[in-house]
Amino acid sequence: MDARTFSQINGKPIVQSTGYATQPPLQRFLLQCHQDYVTDSSGAVADYIPELKKANPAHFGISLATIDGHVYDIGDSAVPFTIQSVSKAFVFALALELVGEKRVEAAIGVEPSGEAFNSIRLTSDNRPFNPMVNAGAIACSGLIHQVDGESAFDRIQEKLSQFAGRELGVDEDVHRSERLTGDRNRAIAWLLRNYAVVQDVDAVLDTYFRQCAMLVTARDLAIMAATLANRGINPVTGVRVISPYVVAKTLSVMTSSGMYDYAGEWVYRVGIPAKSGVGGGIVAALPSQLGLGTFSPCLDTHGNSVRGLKVCETLSARFDLHMLNRSADVRTCIIADYDISGISSRRSRQPHEQQILEDHRQDIRVIELIGALNFAAIDYVTRRLSSEPPAAPLLILDFRRVPDMTQAGARLLGENLAVLGKTGVTSILAGFEDQSPISAVIRASAGDETRLRRFVLLDDAIEWAEDQIIYRHGGFIQSKETSHLTDQMLLAELTAEQIQALAELSTPRHYDTGQRILGAGEPANSIFFLQSGMVSVKLASGVRLASLGPGMVFGEMAMIETERSADVWADTAVRCLELPLDAFSDYRNLNPQIGLQIMRNLSALLARRLILANAKVDLLSAY
Ligand code: GLU
Image 1 (cartoon, protein in one colour):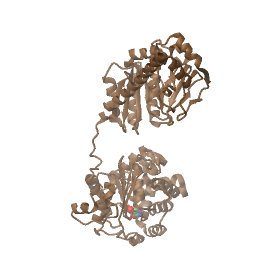
Image 2 (image 1 turned 180 degrees about the vertical axis):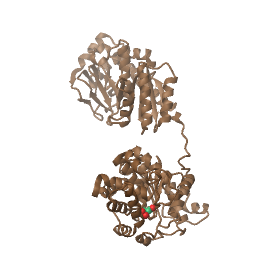
Image 3 (image 1 turned 90 degrees about the horizontal axis):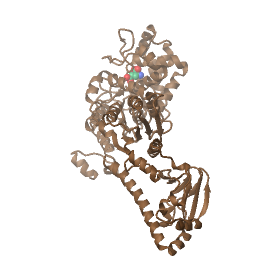
Image 4 (image 1 turned 90 degrees about the vertical axis):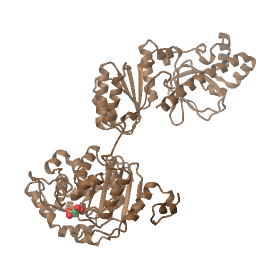
């Protein structure tokens, strides 16, 4: 669809920049909003702070920041204006972080006041109603001042700058203007002092006025909101600005009291936690989805930006964004649930080991999880674990596709693993990085006495579980063994003399632990028979294709290809025999029957690998 048809379909002319038709739909939608509402000049700029009267009523900017850090900017999204009351949400978050919820809650309530933002009334126990009205915000600045004294504002500036992802400045004229005229706020601050909520009135008020005079753009507000929506991590800079716990508290008061005495209507109609300011800014944060920042200085009778309000209402309605309009099917969190029949680790096993694994394949259960996991999803997983006996003694849970898990979910899982542990189940967590805080919570909830193992890679976890099964059932792990060429699968069916002849063509080699034996891209001109130790075949990315032990062959693709396709590393000290390909070819020419048998053995080895690979692909496509 080109730009012209789009404008005709909507029945009204719209201004398009070049490439309009190729812009992402959300960009086009926001542009349309801007065009629809830019003509609305109702409302009035705030004038009770004289300097705010100078605002240009024509300014109109919209920015939307996504959770993956993309920012859509429309109109005057780079025009600076004073943050005013929007700061209250972020300073509340800072106060919670700095002095803790007990002190904050002792000083400030969380009830909507039902009155104007600058009301002088307090609750019956002499606290401000909530941190989104002036009294509560001044009390918040007071708490920070109690910790930091004169540098309280520096702390606020630093924190809000982290939220925005850039250094935020102050409009000194607006600050001065409010300091000279802000008698109502002064009255509030003295009242708070009377109830010992605030001590140094002048210093606290100056901090508060300064925080309100900080300069932001619609883009800044969008990123600040997206940081809240992203559980406290700024999605543009990647910096953790605030804890998820504080985010939830902040969004709560934004929801109940963020939009002045329009808050109830706002939740009902828009349903996105938000805060507005008399400078014309609105910040709106929809958890796990987006952050929105709008700027347009003309305000309605409640003090909310007229155009900003419309943008929010339209966006929410158009994309079904009301926070209470959610659904989720927790059953999709398990992408695969299997035992190890046909799905072994990439470690090649000796026939006797394979037999043990085959006989006890149901002793290892692997559950692969996907998506952000909350309490409901984990509850479902725990029920799946207990409702489908018999319990496998080795349970592997793979989290590599799980970007996030709530604390509650992690605790629930830990508790469940503890219960399973008491029945003899060893749980193995795969897919967590070494320092993962989520796996730490799972471990802590499982308790010290619960046997829990952790691996970064699922394949390593399966290999470890296989080793346990082999040990438990009397097998031995091959790396400690020494093998003779007669054990070589590639040389199966050959006579002792024929094998001896091949041995004489070969050269003994030794490698130290960690040494690279072969490199991808090198000419493939020999085959290695592993006699003792372990090697891994790996791609340059570090992904392991196979681990091999005594009795196995590597570099055997040289019989088919001219270049090595992967690296081979010595995992332990390694002893092997290297058979040069040209000597082997001469031998094959002289003994065509033997050559044929070896090629047959090679085909069998490759077929086994293919069957395993197919089983893995099949497993995932079946879910
Ligand atoms: N600095 C302003 C005041 O305290 C902020 C008001 C607002 O944005 O709601 O009056």
